[in-house]
Image (cartoon, rainbow, N blue to C red; front, side):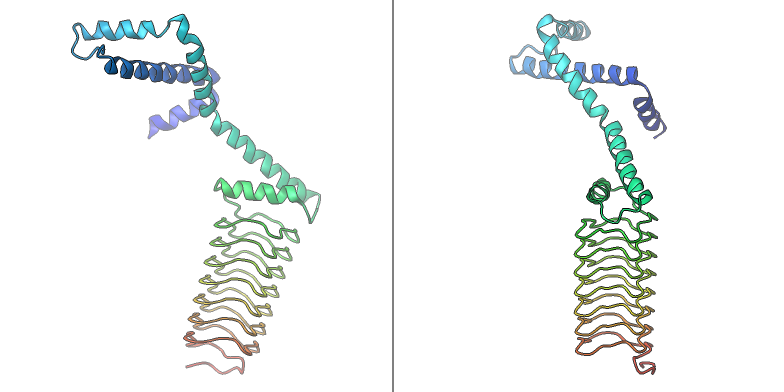
Length: 279
């Protein structure tokens, strides 16, 4: 492990070392190809005496003038692959610059920022604790994103794809999430007070201990969602689908459940809209 780390550090910091590695790998690749051809024609070194001298002769033959062009192309290709880590790091650095510049300029709408966020998430870069209050992120594609502890208050996330995203302890107070896909997302302890989740897909989402007070969840899909200990006081849940949802110990005082589907939902210990505790 130590040697692997050391080699990666050298590859990162030393251009000559990268070139030497590319030369060595390129030479080895050509040698293997030559050996395969020799085996095919019955002229391989295996079983010959002396074996080492035969291998040395074949290695020297690789340096022939007719092999220079192919060898050069191979070395360039290998160098390109070796430097892919640097290019990715540069790409990430530029993406963060776009995000930071949009935040500094307080620009609500920025297609460049949306693309930068999507690119970072595609490369599995964590977006934890990023601050984007009031940003326009409509239809953004951030499935599976790490958005823990992010500040997204009053952010426009209508029709966003946040499927499987980790939004634990995120601040989404007053956020517009109408029609967003939050299925199987982790929203445990998230702040969603006054958020608009009309028609949102929250199937199987984890909303344990989340603050959804005064949130609009009308016609939203909360099937199999975990809402243990969640605060849904004065929330609008009209026509919401809460089949098999777990609302154990949830605070539902003054919430509106008219025409909501609560089939097989767990309500043990929940404070009901009337103020009574469900047995």
